[in-house]
Amino acid sequence: MIAERSDYSFLRTRLLNGDPSISSLVSDYLQRIHEHTYLNAFIDVYDTWALEQAESVDAKIRGGEQPGLAGMIVAVKDNICIRSTRVTCASKMLESFESVYDASVIKKIRDAGAVIIGKTNMDEFAMGSSTENSRFGVVRNPHNTEHVSGGSSGGSAAAVAADLALAALGSDTGGSIRQPASFTGVYGLKPTYGRVSRNGLVAFASSFDQIGPFARSVSDIAALLKVIAGRDPYDTTSASVPVPDYPARLNKDISGLTIGVPEEYFTDDLEENVRSVIDTNIEKLREAGAAVIPLSLPHTDYTIAAYYILTTAEASSNLARYDGVRYTYRADDVEDLSGMYTRTRSEAFGEEVKRRIMLGTFVLSSGYYDAYYRKAQKVRRLIKNDFDAAFTKVDCIITPTTPGTAFRLGEKVDDPLQMYLSDVYTTSANLAGIPGMSIPCGYDKNNLPVGLQILGKQFDEQTLLNTAYALET
Image 1 (tube, rainbow, N blue to C red):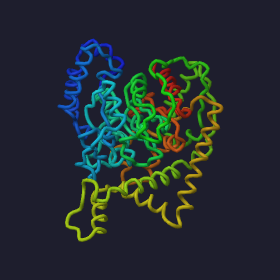
Image 2 (cartoon, one colour):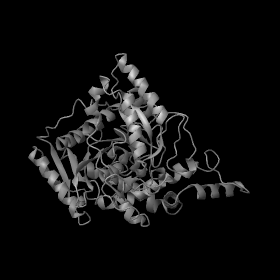
Image 3 (cartoon, rainbow, N blue to C red):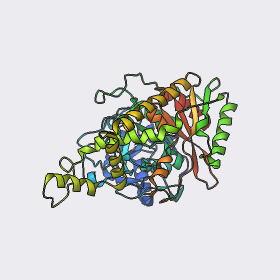
Image 4 (cartoon, rainbow, N blue to C red):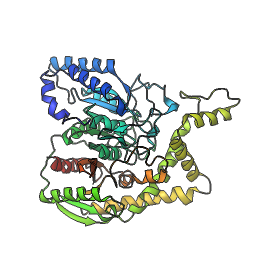
């Protein structure tokens, strides 16, 4: 089910020479998607529009142009807006809602010559760690279809892993790019908060959400990040920080790099299979010339609690807009406004979304705000301080991406706490606003992929990319 190596950097020169044409490549990928429907990676596939995009880029190349992402076939998570297409967030609430504009990242990749082939499946409103909370059904892991693909960007990860797209866009609120990248054996990057515009991303938790790329090589991640990064006047939280030429600055020479290994991420909760693979890769980094030192991130134990208090509070606020008045779903046969609100939200939201809305409403309520929300904000600052202190000693930090490999479908869906703990190593990066990247680094005894996570200083994605490149090559 896993395709042989197929990445954009490998194909680019041929595509610019017209062999194959982008149109023929898109046709091949459309066929592959329809042959792999059992993975359920896509919600919508743009058969006609993708070919129209491809023909347009082919014409530009024949005219002498060489767009930066010419012919990169990209799948897009279905919480990112594309004009005149559905943006469902995998929810009954929005299942027939069409966007009236393009997200900023969509405009950027299309201007650069990328071809958008379809919208990928996800956990409803990006709330989940397995893509089992979708109106459109579960996404299966291409390595073993009885296992999950991770979440909430499980469709994007599965699409890249099964070579149904050359790259994909996802969103990461607490690990929703890195965890599925780990589970499916692909590269996934969560940029620094503010590095990539959120304009056109349907909000889950606005101070955590970040759009980022999936791909099958480090160079493809670098190429896509170069295009989507940068200040956007339509997003006031996007940062006015120069964007490096990430592909041109890729360098596998990491001699002199200092890498930290935090003791809090290597406890008894880490599966032995995963620990062994991570340790092997840390040794490879040493052999490549990096200095590897132990360090401590003392507030790590509080990350999950702080994360779920703060993100559910923001979700409660962000999802209040879905009331049956302004968006697609509205309950029938209601007698009054209050009844319409109640029934619409009860019928159109799934169980996990309702669980998080209720938790978020509770922690924001009178009498509990100080005890939970305000305290969690203080803990968030302590977690950021831990990273700030660590980065005075090291250039980047290496951890496992997840405590274990992809679990079986249905294994945790009825145990929210165990599901939430699968994000224990990824939420800290979102709390601190730093970049994080998951890279495939081996397999466990069941031949399921293991992911290694690299965490870096704010706006220093280049160090993450170079460290990943050293391991890749």
